[in-house]
Image 1 (cartoon, rainbow, N blue to C red):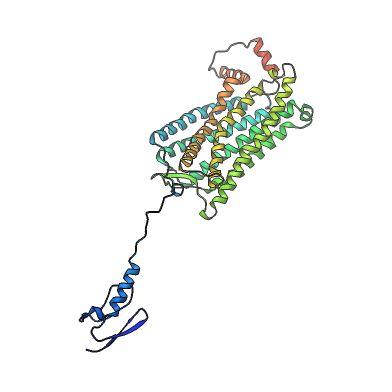
Image 2: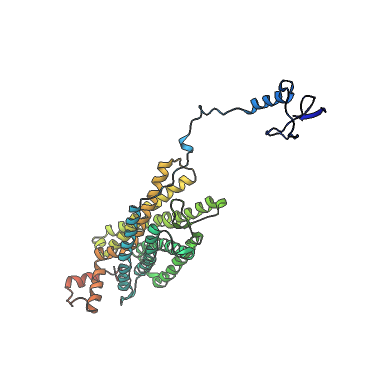
Length: 396
């Protein structure tokens, strides 16, 4: 039998008793298949293989490993179908109230024979903003039960309309607070300015600013949800810059859509109310102030919880506040619930005008009588005096 050299692990040996055979290992050994091992004890290959086997044949010891619950991924939270159905019915209910209510308010203000004061003009544009928000409600009502079925284009349009309505509403309320401050606290300066022209210019600027702030809605698109098989309409940023874009848009939303307007409104109304209380019967004569204060309070009650929930979500995403799965789920639920509360604002103002605005009710009844919807009745002397005494607003 011929001697053959067997190369293994960089070494080389000569053996006359066998020729190397194929072994299924990580090493490349080639041989013919018609040979066999005659004496394994004389084979250095077997000794080396057993050594390698012992080195490779080991197991990990997992007995000392403890799972850290904080590092576990949170389960995707999904609202029950009953909750989504209730949300759908709620959106439909708000829509059915908001559309006719705001249309009636818009007609009463817009068809007034008297020249509109700046506050009334701002209220009229506020009605338009509420109508824009109300028009988006059927889309959201459908999406919470059946997913977003309207495509990418409508996703962008609906999101932009919602953002435009949100920003313009708070900005018009800020303009109203500043106008009341100028008329009551700085009456001499207000008389020297052309308030009618300024009010129209301000309205145009508000819509332009609101439109610019709503441009991030172009990032919205329809994509499959992680929690269900439905499509969702939401903002989808580039993963490499998602945190930066989300932080920038939320800072703008909180600052320009809530904090700064609130910082303007509160001092204006505080000084205005203080001035009215100093004058005997001043607050009673300025009946429009009651309506305006109720409108501002309604906006804050509807949108403040949503801003707080979004702020909490922002703090979580930026890791400013530590959180667990329970806190994450609680914030998600709070954002959904408070957003629904914010959408309710689109139908609140007409209710406030009807119940708080005494002059609005009189104007509405007059128009209904002219249209033949109500029987004509004489206006009492007390009513005539109340209408003529309220000179700060033609409607409220």
